[in-house]
Image (tube, rainbow, N blue to C red):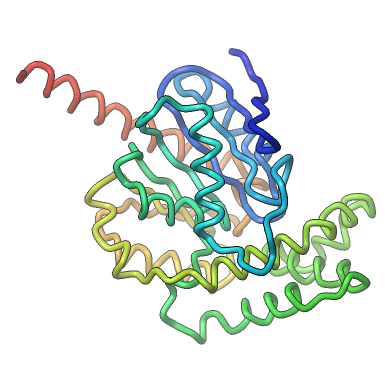
Length: 283
């Protein structure tokens, strides 16, 4: 298999393998490299396309004042236009912020997708329970209000919320500094997610249009678990699976997550091919 980077005007994307396309969207403070283990799993049967979201990896930083979730999906679509054939459909996988982006893209372009897989998408604008978001909003306030001199402390607050107390302190100083440099985009991610106008009723029925898998961690923050349960209620035909890990399981415990994603995509793709063959025979 050949792995390569295609430079699309400051929007690099990692493509590996052959077969039906699988688009991968990473979490806040991550990059396309987050998916290296899943790419290894999928590349024998699928063409994986891991995209850097704006402000991460090799993608440019967006404008702060007006940034929205629609800007992020526009960026993803522009990248995909450079690597997919016109109207080519794909399987879509998103984690955390990348899951929120994936859900918005699926809502806007359901006809482009073969399937949708989400690991705890942080689409908190969809969560009707304000109490469940109180702790998260406190973290968001720290992140968005951090002055340059406070970035290390604010980044520690952010990382420890998602990965557990002491996680940031255990990192090497160089890694801490690298993550702190990404804090301004993390603030914009919060801005985009909290400012999105969609509601649960807007995505209702999406699971009837395309196969959907919802994944969550049994040790994740309560707000992400509450959101996943709300999504499951709005998408009753979606498959729901929980793994014995936390919110960052796709990164920290890929052996728990990747087989579930691989099996679901393979099943959805087999069903797609069966429908295509049946239609061809009927014609």
